[in-house]
Length: 239
Length: 239
DNA sequence: TATGACTAGTTGTCTATACCAGTCAGAAAA
DNA sequence: TTTTCTGACTGGTATAGACAACTAGTCATA
Image (cartoon, rainbow over all chains, first blue to last red; front, side):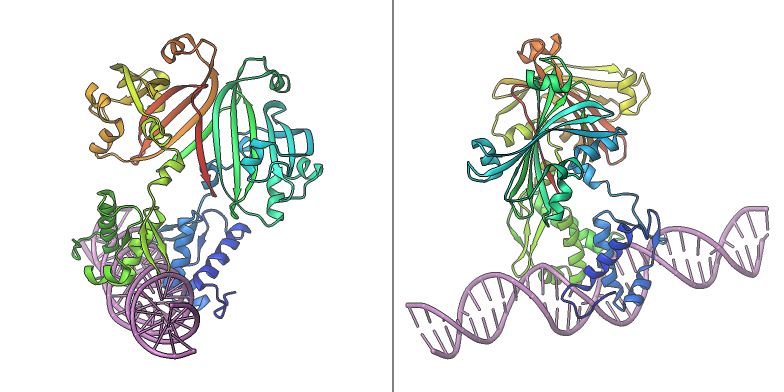
């Protein structure tokens, strides 16, 4: 359970143990977890050490303390949504739509100047180019082009069709650190108009995203064209 | 300095004292603050109490700890920028433009249905309506309409022209808690076209923001129309 | 039937102390 | 002169214990 000889701090081990119970669903939302003194006794550590573990989880939004009552599992982890790092799929689900995507093309190619620069690779290095139409309730919402360096990830069409790109990233042991995103309004060009089933010259929202791994290396750049008449980008900002 | 008889927790008092020095600019970015042991001695409290104060400030992004070296004032309120809660002025400055704004109209009026609902007030309650053109290097960038309930804040034209609305909010003792924002692409209507010096039918970015105070009450709703050809909305997302 | 006092249980605050683990500069050794 | 070591600093982890503040139930009393 808790290994006192481990080089990992005790509070960290306790933290992980609690997090696991929450993630596994063993302790559901609003469940009251054992009291600090109970933890201390069970794990044979001091109450302050337990408090440090719990404090961290409170700061991360996993737990909520109520003076005089106890410590409870928080309602949800909304943080990710707040920070906007959601995939199209999650985004649409949270709005109550049925998301889907249609693969237009998937190929290996070489990076041209701008793409290479953004991905921080050499100009002729191999990259995957993935073109998809994103649908919500079977209505085309966006046309999305993704570029990923080949040397980072082994991909094939079934990866894209079935799982999400991000689960492949995780499988490869990479962790996404942050992303920068830009949004601008524009007018649809011919190429998109057909796919998105809108008239040429209609309003579209261009979203460009660049995702970075914890290693500091760019994972992908994504260029999306959203229908202006159907899509609104929502952000919640704290503080 | 620190009042041991006060009902306010000692760590909280220390927290405020440190925050004040940072806000006043007495301790600038990258300044090393006194060590935990020094604080403990000066304030005549235990080191653990000092740690609690510092921990909170680290969590809030004010301070950064470096083992073996010390505790330092964080680079700047990057966090605010990350979370996107920046004003037009700050936004433009950070991009190297010279921001300005031209007041188009400022008047008291009564809230119509939708505005009232958004501001959580009665339908005929008084509100300020502020219309402004936002400029960057003297080029019109956005046309912005702001609604604020009169009963929340006493405003006059000079407030708007000189200071920012947010400094008035602070003066009144209010603290902004969070905001929700939506972005969508659209086509400019006649009314905006003239003011923004673009042709009718050009791409524009509509940004709607609703700001909430820590009291839970909505402070304002802001409706902005940005020129699609000149403005890009940027977000950085962590985690 | 209410009301208030008590009690056991919770988290919140705080102390005093100990040792561990990086960092860095200056003293000692090569 | 250069290298190595040591000591004094930093924050990081952990203990044991005390009392305060708050919650909710119990029980005696008006």
